[in-house]
Length: 410
Image 1 (cartoon, rainbow, N blue to C red):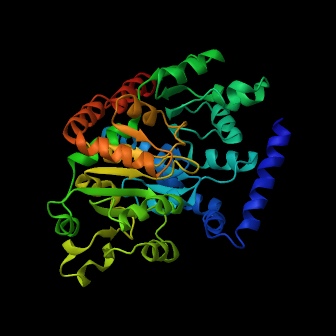
Image 2 (cartoon, rainbow, N blue to C red; image 1 turned 180 degrees about the horizontal axis):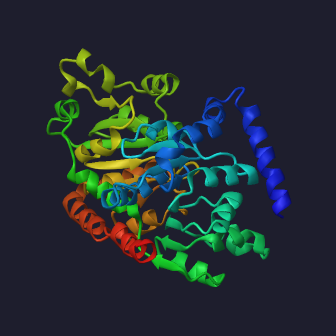
Image 3 (tube, rainbow, N blue to C red; image 1 turned 135 degrees about the vertical axis):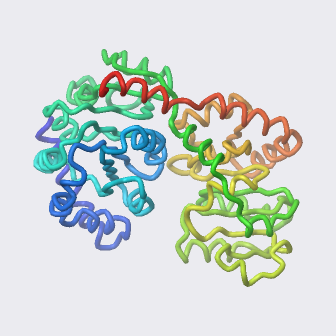
C-alpha cells in the first residue's frame, strides 16, 4: 500500500503541473513550491528547533492561530514555522507577522519529507484539523518528534474507520496526542484503539471572540447603514446570488444588504453588479458616492474586512453550503448575529449545534430563506442573546491544549 501511495502522490503532483497550464490556483501551487529546498535552507538557522504548524488552508490557519499566538507569547525564543497546502491559505497569510517563516508544504514523497524534517528539526509539530500526510508523519515519528493534531473532527465515513487495512490508520498512530472538537471524535478514535485524546472543543471560538475584543469601527460601513437593519451575505457563491438577489431587487428583502462574495475577481464582481437592479456600489469606490445611505447594496470587493463587518449585521447568510461546504459561521455569531445557510453542512458540527440551539437556520430554497428571515426578525433580541451565550460557553480550547503541552514539553 505504501508503494501505491507513493505512486499516487507523484501522479497527483503531475496532474497539478498539467492543471497549472490553465488553472491560476494550480499555477500558484506549483510556483509556490519552486526551489523550496533552497529557500528552506536559507531560513534553516532562523527556524531550527521551531514550533511547526501545518494548515491545509485559511480556515485551518484560523483554527491554529490561537494556539500559535499563545505558544509564541509563552515561548518567544522558539521560532514559529507555518506551512500551507493550499494557495488560498498561503497567499492570504504569507505575511503573517508572528511567524518566523511561512511556506508551502512540499509534495509528500519520502525524500521530500526526510529533507524537510532534517532541515528544521522541529521541537514540536501541530497538524490542524484534517491533514494526515503519510510520509511526513512517518518521518516525524521516526525521529521521535512530538506531533499533535489540533481541532480534530472525525466522522464515521472517513477511511480510518471504514477500511480494514492498517495502512489507513497508520498515520493516526504517529501522533503524540489528539485535541479533538467533540466526544464523537474521541469515540471514533477509541473504536480503533487510539486513546491519547483530549476533547477540548474548537479553537476557532477562542479566535473569533478575541477578534470581537479587538474590534475597530468601519466608518464607511457605518456611514452606509446609518440606523437601518442589515443583511450580510458572507462568502457567497453564484448559486446563492441567483437565489437571493431577486429578493433584493423586488424589495422582498427590505434591509440594507452587504454582499461579501467568496470570489472577488473582476468577473465575479461584475456578475453580481449585472444581476442587481437596485442602487448599489463597491466598497472600494465609496468615495464616489456622497450619499451612500441612498444605496441599497454595498459590495465588499476586497479581502480581510468581512469578519469585522459582521458587527454591523442584523442577521447573516453564510455561503458555501449549496456547494462543497459551509464557510465560517462563527465569525458572525461572535457578535451575536444569527445565521442562515444552505443544506450541505454535515461536515460542520458547529452548524448542527447552531440549529439545535435555534441560532442557526438551514435552508433549501427561497421560501425557506424567507421563513427563516421572518422568524429571526420577529425574535431578533432573544436570538442574539442566545447566540452570544452559546459562543461564550464555547471558549477555552486553547487553555486546555496548553495544559497538556506543558505536561509533554515542559
